[in-house]
Length: 87
Image (cartoon, rainbow, N blue to C red; front, side, top):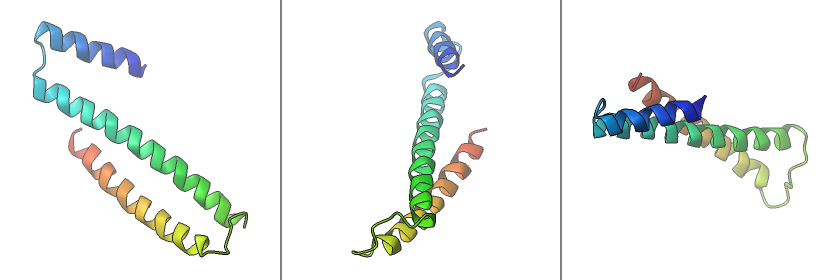
């Protein structure tokens, strides 16, 4: 389904139905969604490792991972606000 919407955007741009700035906004939103999905995946892995105690805690990885998870949540919140702005 995503490929169809990209093709529609490309065809609409070729026929002049949408402007370059509208196309850039659509591409930015798609990129932001990809980044957000990747961050959610890495955060889920970190959370899983923290909760199952399979993380190496010798060098303070547990503390830094908790800080990283908090930071990723803050970034995701910012991207989510950005995405809702363009809807």
